[in-house]
Image (cartoon, rainbow over all chains, first blue to last red; front, side):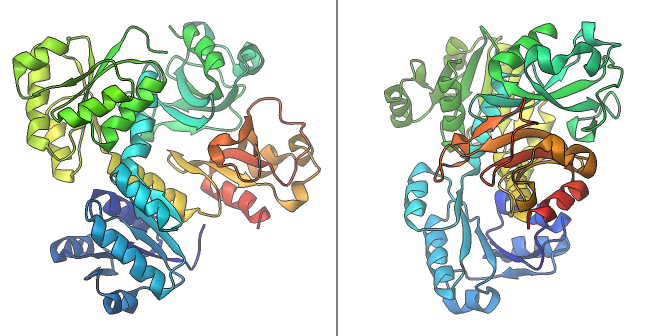
Length: 229
Length: 229
């Protein structure tokens, strides 16, 4: 959706590479950089046209590749000194949009003082997400949404099979919002290969193989989940 | 929702700690372990009743604390040798549910051979999530959902203000599903403090301050987002 915007990604560890690959998949205009020539060559082999080996602590070297309007993403992991020095250099170049990774709480505190666009802390973000998923592990998928509001996937209770969502009055009975109907592409497929209907499924006859994606308060969702047990 | 289930978390770096803290917040039964006594003491100070300093490579020491029915989470980060050895010891104890972190692609490949419940790779998971969010950065929130299906938050276009969702026929016109209406708790609040209605908002008069949480295909969502520009 964002057009004519260039992304500059510095640091090609697991986090940086995944950002780069996802952007590449979506045809974003991205230039990737790392100090390590072997990592840079690997990205070139993966099809990255703009992959450069760079000394990110050399202001003139950075200035050659980075423009003030670029969106900079710093994902240098534990090379924290390098990370904060690079932020300063980018600011001197005039870059206004800077995202930087933190890997420790103390780094978070320092980055907060540096007035950048947003701090990324994948361990924290994913740690919280995983714990919430695990606490509801009878359900396939959970995401934290808003205070006390969750988005979950629930299997079809036996007594729902053969009926429709309209027949069952799920929305009114449970005070939840049904946002999708999932059916597996095949028995062995993982979740990403499931087919999801997100409009017009209200009158579909529910099968045992289906699951519902619903949003609601924890208490209301629990009532629905109890039906599936 | 999960009751009487105990979690054993080994490794208290940023990822492990965030999992532990989230579980603690939700009153889960959790025992946390690390080799480093200072980290263990910090967790005790935070209110963790069961925090133990442990040599996780000593089978008898692990067997004293871990039961076969426990759910084990290994978050040892770069201590990968320690990580795989601990998995073997846990399997010998009879633990059936084991989650383990990977921090590198090569670790992922090895862990895949070890037949555990699930491999966690926060850098990959969060990297992808962040890139997708950034590619749609005009929107406050985005999550990948299913192939080509996205969940996004969109601001209220000017021409929607003063009307209701029923009046506007958004669902039929744009082929998307509206799953929530958000209003800010105050001008300066961050997203987590927003109020969200997820049922019964269809007849609410839309205000400039509201935003809609919608789910749909990328193309259909783009059509709606264009209205907001």
